[in-house]
Length: 414
Image (cartoon, rainbow, N blue to C red):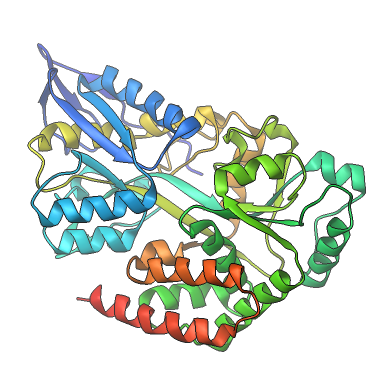
């Protein structure tokens, strides 16, 4: 990771504030105010508000925050945009596909001048439409694999699996431990946590990283034998009873911490999630056979319908800056997209280890986030159906999803 620290926020002039660094935001009055909406709640909301406090102090912009759940965020903003209304002055979207479609429809302000892609871990192209860049990257959610408690593994003499057969043996061993509901936690929000573990099984297939990229770009079909195999492997685990009851992903953390569901495929936010009492007790392993890690970026967008465009641009530039991202990095559970956040900003060892691990493997986009709706919604729905009825024919699932995938990719094309 590049640890050079460049560009800080500085106030100049009599009450006017400008941002040093990328220089795209212009100047705003100290009285300007903007609203931000995103999906962060509870502990994550507190972490983001710490970033907000920092940026407010550096820019003079008054920033208020209104959280929404993922489904509400995606549906309400689209309805508002089609009516020519800005849901908020800044909307944080979790899906590149949605950014591109909103930009192409004229719903968003271009913000490519607010960030230099050479200084971030992503590229302009993933959120580009009509020759313009419509979003700016904030934190990265890395989805490395199965989290577990070191104390649980030590108590029961368990070891991280070196191959898939050893993984199956581990599940069988955990399944026999008193107090365990099931070896694998089934987290649910709107279906997305189940999609994360499903993508891991796609990635463990032959050339899995390229397969995932090809699916995103429409160069592969969801009926590919490797995708079917991934679903069959998941089905076998479900039929064996290795996955727990489906619960809200936040509540599932409580069962995980009590070792009732000892393995939980989750993201880099895990160490600072509320139910985690001691992050130093955490470790993780990648699903055997995978050599790539999924990353999902939080994208800051500015609706074309806001009356506070200049203040919103100033706030966005401050939030995504190295200094802005460092605030959350120091609090833990956050992987910055800025390459200029110092490595020593990580307060929790496992977070620095995870960041370094990400530098050593291929990073691939989150499949459903990158493609967006209608594929994403159907993907989530089909997975919830599979978890509810694991005996169904998985080829029917992949055939149905392939039709929606091709439709979505074609809609997102030039």
